[in-house]
Image (cartoon, rainbow, N blue to C red; front, side, top):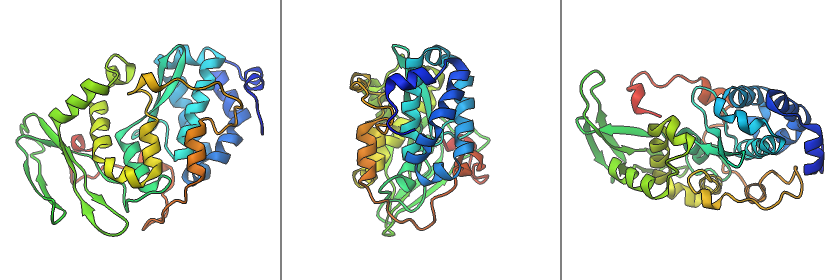
Length: 296
């Protein structure tokens, strides 16, 4: 449905769950056309998960009760599809949350940011890095020069308070870096930039702390992985003063002109393994050799 105007979009789309279903039925082909390969290949699964997630979230009910709100959801889906991010599922890459004025915005998770660093446009990491929590009583030692870490948590004992986070970043050229951030530093970033009164923070403060830590630890690869950099810059939920969008000229204007025009200009880096199917993160069990509470 090329060159679909906003007025025509409103004429076609209903409201509520039916409106979301109609949106996928009428505009799904456009979303699939702009989607990253992993989303395009599994588009039916991707769209069904997104439909369940959007229609099943009580806080999104006011958003999808209006056509303007559904249009904002469509824009969020366009951003997620372009970046290859999964909406919903057990380990979601991103959520769609209410932003105010009856509209929604896309909020990436720590998993989503990590996924983009390895599989987004211009990816620079060989594998999707894990964000690992370190508690004050953990057996932990880090050798940044050697790119090695010893971390032996006590899974059933008192681990004490959360001390900080680390990631093991393996770049495509083979070198390894292990950035760290303390929990106090994360709290400082959240206090300065987080939208603490918003539903995402109220839903799971720990998840938002994890995401903040991931953003800080991925700053260096973001300088090279343009897709990751764009995803970070489009995190409107943490920077609501930047969330004003210009009037949309065309619904198929790639849903977000900055994201999509930049993404089109990129040549995705080759990775050691093919980009995984969409179901990889959502259905993959967390490693059994680590405390499930340590990995977000």
